[in-house]
Image: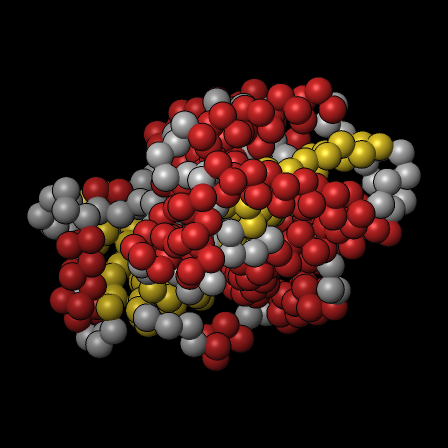
Length: 463
């Protein structure tokens, strides 16, 4: 049988693979028997690959356990298969065609592949009715609810049913702030996430990074043989053994090629591996868009509540907090410390040295406030005015911290604050408490100008 003749008469990237069915029913490693010229260019993806000759092991050139699973199924069942995956920075459509064998016990699979830089929606419709219905149901639930966590939880529940797995979750990954969160069918559980990561002696984000490295450019792992994991990540392998996990699904969730999360399932139905893979290929695409949108809204909310220059909360955040305290209720702290800190001389610096110098002064002011009051709520209320709210702080601690801040600012070149503070308990009025602290700050500012009359004249002349 002239295998090379077959692939050379296919215009797309094409190759033929073979493997043997062993006496115990298992399979030998996969061999590359023939490739056409377009396909041979893929060997360059592996800089350590040897020069190709027919019959060389597949793993000398590539490592993709999902491809291997499809190849084994196609060759051994003589069933044509189709896959469409996001891997190696592109979308790959793959057609697996069984070829009649001329040797007993040897199976052949012709693999025809096409790369596209962007998703083609028509490619994703080529699924069985069962897979399409599962994806449709998940997609509907993803868009039904306004509550993101609840929507993700119900999605996890549906994915768990598709996989027929003992455990299932979605791990969200935010590469910008290097954070992760864990959602299962019962909601968000940071304790489960920490337990999962600590089993590998890692932080949650280190765990996510390790998972991405194990995937090695492909989209997923569906395994009941952990030899690949043992080779690539011994810590994860040991953790799986300790938790008595027999099979694992790990599916990367991406949006615009950026990793935003993982679908993770343990002890799934191995016999449904192909159906699971096809379902999650589509599902992860829709989930990725929802996660990316949620992360974007979260970043916009952070931006709307934070002063980007000083990296403390802004006036909008302060007003929301004050409104919350006005409404009271059981969440209202029984005691509140309020500190008003006005940066002396900012206008003079802006007028005489320029706004870049003024911005540097403000950043320095924010840093000093965070150094002393970092455990409490710091707001930039206006141009040169900062407010600190200290829920449940003892009065003695408030006095000590305010004195520490005053001393620190007095000993920092170019920085001077006028400070007013107060400690309030019982049925206090937060607006009135802030007014009292503000009035005390102005008394301190007047004292500053009394001791520094030249700065007051310069300030008055610049008003």
